[in-house]
Amino acid sequence: MDQEADQDNAPSYVDSEAALRAEVEEHLEISQQRRWVFPRAAVVGGLAGLAALLFRAALTGADSLRAGLISWAHTMPAIGWAFPALVGLTGAGIAVALTTRCDCGAAGSGIPYVEAVLHGYRKLDWKRLLPVKFFGGIIAIGSGLTLGREGPTIQMGAAVGQAVSESLGVSGEERFTLITAGAGAGLAAAFNAPLAGLTFVLEEIRHDFEPIVFGAVLVASIVATIVARIGAGQFPVFTVPNYPVPPLGSLPAFAVLGVVAGLLGVAFNKGLLTFVELYSRVPARFTVAAAALTGAVIGVVGWFSPILIGSGNSLAESVLQGRMLFSTILLFFAMRFLLTVSSYGTGAPGGIFAPLLVLGALIGLGIGQAAHLVSPGLVPIPAAFAVVGMAAYFVAVVRAPLTGIVLITEMTGTYSYMLPLLVSCFCAYAVSEYLKQAPIYESLLERDLKRG
Image 1 (cartoon, rainbow, N blue to C red):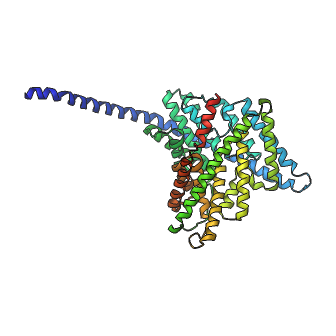
Image 2: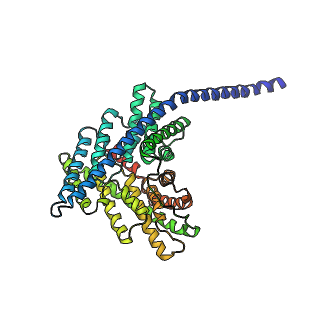
Image 3: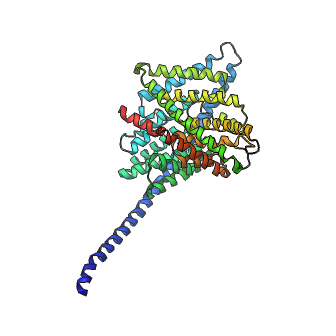
């Protein structure tokens, strides 16, 4: 009987030994992959950081030229408005012509396209995409279209990952890993925020936490951020005054901010998709003309208020300093909202990251000022709400709460705002989910795939 029992138990020992052997072999395989993937990810991160740095420098120069042109044009009040209008018309027309005739994949932010590539729905021709995205983005954003550089930088980082993969002849799975690492490095370098690059990729683009992918993105993001900081300095993207930590009694006001951000985030998603659909119905032979007309209108807006056009970094700085009246906030929000959705609808290379942050800051400052009128003791500094508003609005639109919180924390250096950030972002996320509005990049990807 004992012998029979031993025989019955034998398979379990064999199975355990086989499982242990398989686990050891898997661990050795992962270690081997890391030895190869991590150095390659570092190369991708360095190149993506360099591309982001050059892109940022070129756009800074273009913004300065545009501001100088508008200032000069004001010396001729009668016809001065025509000059920024001409710049906007030409820039938007050239940028859209580049994407429609050279590489349609370079249109818009590029983030949905990267997601399509990683799901196997699209192919990434980096030799065509990189120059079109780089120069098209400079022309589009530099001429005044209300778009951001962060989406294009993510797509260019992914293209760098594809380029390194092809040059090294890596396997299909490793190629996807390096493309993912490049995308994270692009965001990290654009915002000077390595952890945000990691969280955005895992939360939005890749949707998995495989150790190899996690490690590769982290390595690439760190290296890209180092490169960006060497070129641009070790400072947060936005300068926020040293505001005191909001009192606990102000948390209900931050919850209200999250609810308002959620409602307006749903409105943004619907508005953006509406404008994308409207521009898509323009006959192909008039696509460039429609974009050029949009650019001309934006140029005229820039003649009256230069701070309203372009990526909006200067406007965001002003809002974070609290230097804006409530009536001005309402006007600027409405104008930036319309300019952003119409600019993106043209199909010009440019993203919505920075415009979203500007809109969120305006919402935050508006709610902060209203709460200050009701209870000055609980809300002594309305501008503190602008910081939290950026994260809440980003979460409402993109539906990536961890990224929103980490991104704003790294961009502003305000780590003491963690509790208000959590409250506002949760409320914004809950409202968007309750209203069943799909995240913007998911909607854009679905639309793109349906069109073929």
